[in-house]
Length: 293
Ligand code: PAF
Image (cartoon, rainbow, N blue to C red; front, side):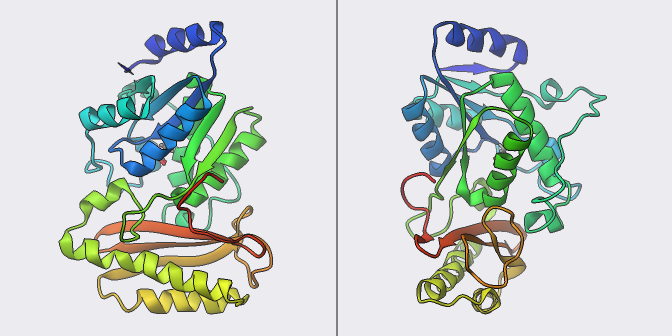
């Protein structure tokens, strides 16, 4: 498996694969790979002849007071994960390789990005859309793989690919959880032992909402309030948001009558964690344990 740092080196490799008629999958990541990332790579390897994993902590998606400088990084470990999962190549550019000093072109979106995480991270999705577009242009994949844990990001990227005619299939893959239910995230590395225990309240509270929906409750406010009440029992948890939104438009719903996304963001100490589940009347809850959606 190769580690490539520049676009100039990467392009001829991809062109060579194309000449051989090989299909290409892309798994965009910010590194510090965990089992959730590995599941994306394994899925990509099963569906493509060659898989590129991008490993780039993208500065444009971090706000001024966010954790860009402290975001965990470990290329050696990432390389071992990618190799084991069967990736052909890691693309690991420096920020200067991805952004010219006078870069002034961004990809932005009018809807989908204002609510949920966009409320407290107003420039985040502009950074995500910009870097993902750049990666799509650089790698030119047939398919790209994203985790359902970042449900808003997945919906935003699907819409961007549709609106800008990228012609790339976006494959959403389920949340991978620790045995005790905590959704895997590179940011879990920030939690101390007490916070790690407290973080279980996210999954526990969502499970209460899932059960209410499964039992037939359709009033979104009641489900939201029950989730918030449960989160309120954990002293280390500070709620950023709890929302029930239309799974496609991400607009808040009053009643649960079409597929919805129940999503939350909660600070545990200084660490902001997100988690979610989707619910469709006939399909029930997708607990995100198996398969791909
Ligand atoms: O989900 C992530 O890790 C990032 O937002 C992504 C998609 C790699 C873009 O930097």
